[in-house]
Length: 305
Ligand SMILES: C[S@@+](CC[C@H](N)C(=O)[O-])C[C@H]1O[C@@H](n2cnc3c(N)ncnc32)[C@H](O)[C@@H]1O
Image (cartoon, rainbow, N blue to C red; front, side, top):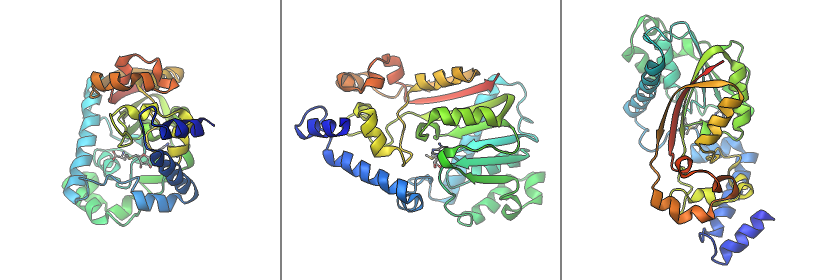
């Protein structure tokens, strides 16, 4: 009913005049992702990085940047982080189709990295040469000994799990994710799973991209105007942004008694743009303070109590 009403208002030219076709196309592609997830992933490259990250050196550079970012924020909360990964068990949620970051963890001493994703790994062989090249580039005693074939399914274990929820066989010292939490269909389930997978006093580092991921039409925040039901029907199976704002992450962290050790927020949405759609925000966002709505990127380090 809500969806029909929304379509009716939009047909009448009300609200943002978001095209009805956008909603219908969204719902149809969501059904495709539900019925044929592998085909959907093939067509959309959902787990890939695409765009600027198609060449080997760009992929490697991206992974080094992600890894360095983890080191940078760890530096804010821990003394002497250089042996920090030594012998650690790490879980990365949503690694995407290229496992370069887990590889860098191993090259820096980690014992094992579990990668949990809600989509299957596109191809184990696709990046074989790049993995072996990275092992040479980031040479250390570990890299000197092993090739990718020695590592995959042993030191790096990729797990395709419904909703990205899985109990790993070894408790993790560190959990990381980058550009993933905003895609989780149930943040409650994901955080509960992270709480189960992490040792007490274990560390989590997450970077969350709170932008529309190209789903906005007129201004970058107008994707917050669709009703929750319409949004669910359009996106629930596709991993498009769940739209939760920074306040939701803080609430869940608090619920599971994770202590925030460090946080960084970017505010790249413009006050003017927010003002232009504020009266049209759907119920779950309409009472939020501007400060939360303007936050476009949230990076935090938390510790399990
Ligand atoms: C935008 S990609 C980011 C990939 C990689 N972390 C990066 O920095 O490029 C989002 C990834 O999160 C995965 N994902 C979505 N929902 C998830 C969930 N609930 N649990 C684990 N992974 C999930 C997607 O399949 C995809 O691989």
